[in-house]
Length: 103
Image 1 (cartoon, helix red, strand yellow):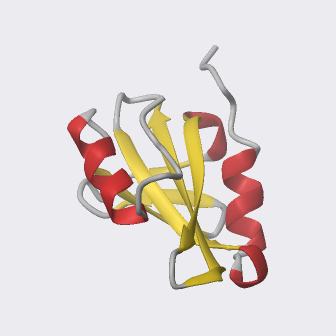
Image 2 (cartoon, rainbow, N blue to C red):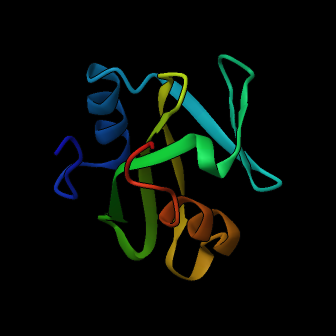
Image 3 (tube, rainbow, N blue to C red):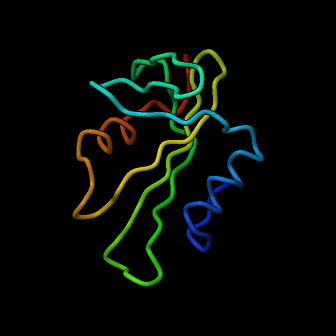
């Protein structure tokens, strides 16, 4: 496991980059889009490797979630989002439903 909820979100992003998860994904219209490579990926082209929920130390109601995702072309990256009451439901549903392994 790369991620740890004992670290901050930014510390986990830094750790993920050390393991090659360098792409920064955005979620738009049921697809992931790489900020760096400008490639869009459909759900069937991605796999969820790992995820972790983080709480803000000064305000536990402020939660975030970090996903590590690998795409069929070998691109590896991160996607973060609010979690809990501020979560974007479509994004969470998309990421949590990603396949675990490519066919």
